[in-house]
Image (tube, rainbow, N blue to C red):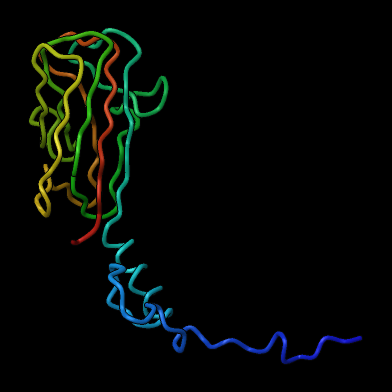
Amino acid sequence: MAIPPFVFGRTQNAFGTPFASEPDRSNGFTSKDVQLAIEEALALAVANDRFVVFCAYNGNANNRTLEAFNGIDMVAAPIRTFTATKLLSVVIGATAASTGAIAFYDRNVSTTVPFYTLNYGGAAFAQASAPVLTPLASIPTNALIECRTITASVNKPHVFFFLSSSTV
């Protein structure tokens, strides 16, 4: 016996399908149908992009450029930005407490003057996060980012830094 076609009938299209149930609930979206909610979510995702970069050195680093790729330091392979980018957060660590700093350079501008520096005094861990809408640093298009330890001997430093190219 064949199943009648009305059992699997057409559904509404995304523009006609309500997104919020009645009564309206607070779901974080202003859209009232599925298609507009999809477009709103896409716009929010693009506006709130985040990229994490990890670099490290598996030894005692004293004024040393870190490696974003195992065995290849950031002089030979810097991180290139293809659009204007913001530095949002930095997390640094080491296997032992030390006093020093991690500095970020745009090799196109200067290899001696960093665009951002994070000091850590007598600790094995430090972090900095940007307040909302205010980045730690702004990085131009086509920058060549290099990260290095400065002023101190750091045992096995590792750095995570978070970038965003959103305009929000």
